[in-house]
Length: 283
Ligand code: PAF
Image (cartoon, rainbow, N blue to C red; front, side, top):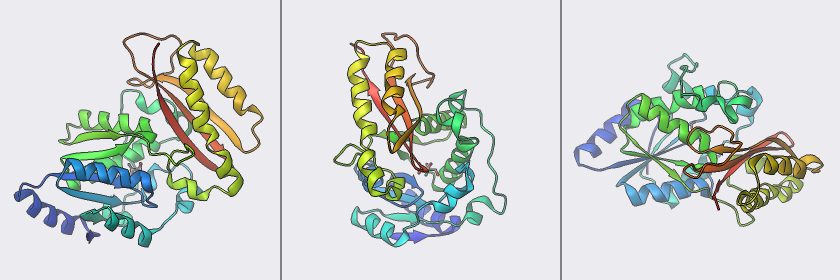
């Protein structure tokens, strides 16, 4: 695996590969890699001939400074994992290399997607994500880029970014990778203490029950039921639960047969914020 820290060296390497008609698959990450990331890289390996991974903890997408400071950094383990799945190129730039001394976000209009769910609780988060993803796409110029559906709102926003900015890259959304007990893989899971880790699968268990209920019960009734499930939970605190349209990400009240829906949830275990979602089916 080749490792580059500067845009210039990475671009020089990739331009040679592009001349040889290699297709570039790209998996942007913030490091602290886990099986979920590896599943994206494996998917990229199936679909493209050269896989580039970036590790960059993007300061502008953190609304809380302490979250940025606490973000796990496990570079040596990350490179081992990347080698184990056959990653070809790692881009590991500094903050200055990406932001050239001006660490601010561009302001985007994602047609309202940015104001739903996470957008209500994490001010400026999606401007930060949009800024860094656009910058990385411009540097790597991949044919395809791979993102997990755990961050479903992020995935939809990146699709919107690509459409609005007319970027020449195909966005592939990949299935949520779960631990055996159902907990969605996340770099934050390593920060859970034993009690929190044992409690956390309750999130996905609840979502599975929601999926069952969606056939017969209204979104409003299901939402009240979920809120009640978390009311007196000893280790988990519900931040939001909503059933929303997959395209607009707006909360729904009534179901329409031609629309696709998902249930979205954000929960705190202590100060660790966990999100998850599940596809819902009409009857
Ligand atoms: O999902 C993530 O890890 C980050 O938001 C991303 C897409 C790498 C941008 O920093």
